[in-house]
Image (tube, rainbow, N blue to C red; front, top):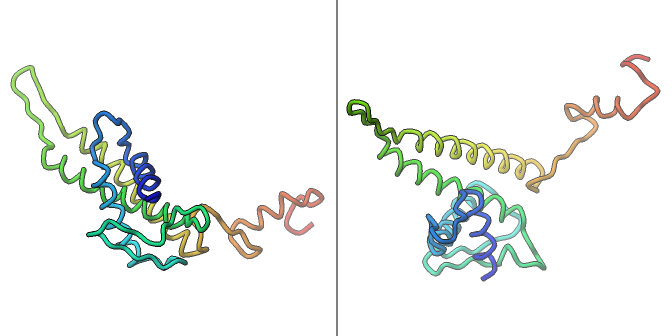
Length: 169
């Protein structure tokens, strides 16, 4: 199905698993992770479309990547949620192996891997939380609404009015 191609590719980019000769995650694992993440995302987000998710049968309907009715918000949010879940799993796995050994002049330190993964994990969590909030506020991920009473709209209106130099003139 097209969702499997598009969403797994997006997730691969988000978790930086792009070396096709040595993928960290198999396609089937990514497809299952996308479905699990979609199921979990449905608990916290009310999407416009109603999706039927069957993890056992590896099916998602209707297809959110279908060009006639593409749901970019669902694709983006579920891809971010999947990346969050996969990076959390990798962080847990590598943190169990984070050791530092020193024997005389030689040293082995595996803690740097964990600190790098922690930075990625924190970043993807922040991006997912911001995307969820953005979707809940205006229904679309990637757009912002600036109304006349929004913070910062006064600065926009002041820059557009070239004949005014201050607030009370």
